[in-house]
Amino acid sequence: MGEVAVLHSEPLQFECNDKKHMTEEGVYPPKSNPESLPGEESSTYDLQEKGYMEHGCQHYRRRCRIRAPCCNEIFDCRHCHNEAKNDINVDYKHRHDMPRHQVKQVICSLCGAEQEVDVNIGLRRVESLLSAICNEERKSLCIDYIHAQQNCVNCGVCMGKYFCDTCKLYDDDISKQQYHCNGCGICRTGGQENFFHCNKCGCCYSTLLRDSHPCVEGAMHHDCPVCFEYLFESRNDVIVMPCGHTIHKSCLNEMREHFQFTCPLCSKSVCDMSKVWEKLDMEISATPMPEPYQNKMVWILCNDCGKTSNVRFHFVAQKCLNCNSYNTRQTRG
Image (cartoon, rainbow, N blue to C red; front, top):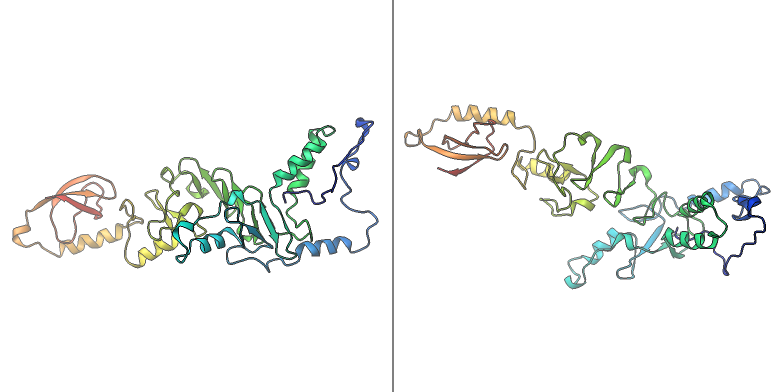
């Protein structure tokens, strides 16, 4: 949370006649009461777990809602906001997306308390109060104390098992293995140990592609060439084609169902087509050309290797003399 769990109505005052003998308990309230009743800790745990995976929307399971900084309206998440504000029935002049990093207020789904989400606000306030007496070790303790406040300041319920203070993201479903990528500037899913950030491509890729993917500058900073959804912030699976361009996995599968096996952007083959080329060899051998076309020569450009060739014309296809691919186009002839 953006604030310390307990806020005082008047300025905090510390008296310290002997800083050398000051203990942590002199600055911070005790974390637990040694004389607490049996079962009190378990009741606190139950309170923080109350409503777990019972609240949220189709995009996130969490126990809070957010106030949009752009239009001051309350939504379950930024995706719900973007879908509502970019609906076809909304005047195009009023359509907009929510700036995720500017979210400042969240509303607890259980008690309805509205509160600040920016942890840096609370950090600055506490550091200013303790600057005269805190050394670097105690400042570190202060930071840890504030960053732990992802619970509601009113009812104590944890509003999200995963919490990112940069993206202002709460999520109870930690099976997604969320992590924040500083290179991308947003949160990703799948486990940080399974991905790396490519600085040239400007996005995160699977570690399996670390030494094998062709770098394309800003590879995911564009729309999907099939459905036109912005790939960089898409929640659907994105894959890298052999050419280096990116596309939704579902969109690529749909292309294959319609016998489209080339990249929509550069026309290079998206999979191993050697078996298909062998079948085309047999079909061309079994299909002789009419006599007027038997000696006709044409120039072709190969979409796979980029080489040009002067080859014999055929109605079925023209084969590249460099890489034996039939993914070619006639340039002149």
